[in-house]
Image (cartoon, rainbow, N blue to C red; front, side, top):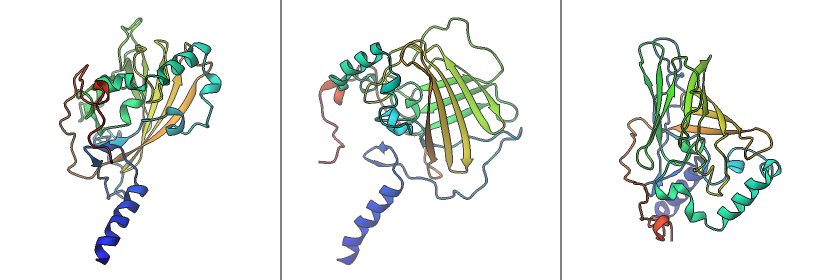
Length: 262
């Protein structure tokens, strides 16, 4: 009887210590070998391989990103405030609920994901980010020294170029569309959005993401948010996740989350 009483308390305590995104009705198991040195590729750059969880906002970019309450509201343009107020009346219209991409930096928040570098035996020319969530989306980051396209067609993940600054991967992106929401609260952006992500593997099992967001069409000045991703345990892989645009299962179709605690 004692074991029956104590075990749930232990599991609850563990869940409180390591809050990670909801996944398949449970938690993603995290790596326990955090004391290992940060791995490197043959050319000396940090190896970002692994299945990561976290690294972006989910519910509230202001709170999740470490900003003070009301900080974003103070720099929103009037049109931005009006759009956010309208979205607050219909939160179920979040494009993510219709299996559409979550954009940056939300893309790294809710489901496990991976960095994939090509090639690995020498300096990378391309970096890809593979996502478990939605329709197995991916991002492409050009690492070959090219510049941004002059007038890129607006897309969900934009046009990304990257480079290393010592042990930090810097990803500079423009060319976003204005369709995705920064978070479930509906924080907006425009096609003028420009993001700079700074990914640093500070320990074997911890990856930090510092993102500077500059969108003069929505905010009066740039702001910076910070997130942390954790490495999942060895053997944990991206899983199959079937989600197609305009899928009517779940909130988009007016159905409650079948996995939610009752």
